[in-house]
Length: 417
Image (cartoon, rainbow, N blue to C red; front, top):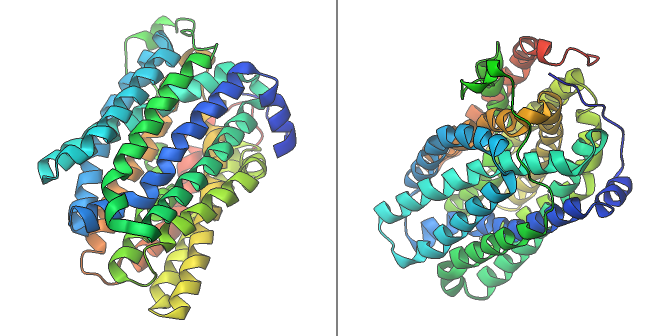
């Protein structure tokens, strides 16, 4: 495996590097448009399922988990496919199909229809990162790839804030009228992002891999220690479920805060990520050892936030503690993302960029599969029992992660620990 040299790059320098590259500018625009829809989705989907379709938290968690489980297998195939063919063309197809699935969601309201949507949309969502990471790898020089990935995510988070703002206005003005059309707004942004991919000038197929890796579609995951590393990283990424599903569901079902506070909190998250993701990635992604250390700190941050919500109760104190916990979950996102970006670019050769990206992305698929199920079932009784479970899980994971990481240390032979 090749190792990329990571140059310390600030937000301003990352912007200058990206702006000088046409494909990098185009990818920033594509992700910005795509994330407007993501902002609306994260701010409204839990409410859409609960208050518009009247589905309980256990059903919501089960539907989201089912979709992610199916996507687990599809993403590995798409990763290899993107390396062999054109990642730009494949990403265009995925985003177009994703947009159409969201536009079609409001046509029916049965549990079967919503379940089919959750499966299809989750599969498409999960398959998108592999060709997207491949395009980033082709758009940036090796020493700028990690900063470029962080910058693109940061720009996307500003767009998520815009989407959350749209959702906040719609929910506060007329929730009953806005919720039914929110999936259509999501779908239109994904269709627009697919159209904008025509501006990207890179995206050719990578050089063919060696004969040793050509026949096994699970090559990356079959590396010694990779399966355990991916599973442990999935636990470390629990911040995603807590930010997108856990806290919104808790607010919606416990009424600890008003419904409009959900998009406000998500908007706060996106602004913090935009401001600090590049710098956090430089620290967390300085080396393999640094990535492990900052991932452990992220896990402890999640554990602390879960305890705050557990002891918060109701009333004004609950408002304050939920906000503080949400900030702690956001810090965990910054640190864990920085570590994950480093793993993604340091472990893979150019000819297997999408393959290894899809293998590492299995950790996020596992998290998005088991995370909503855990949170949904734990909150089914409308009590705070989920939060001590999450706290204990993250504390144990923080202790175990160095040993798990040591098993894949050989995949980063030239890096300082």
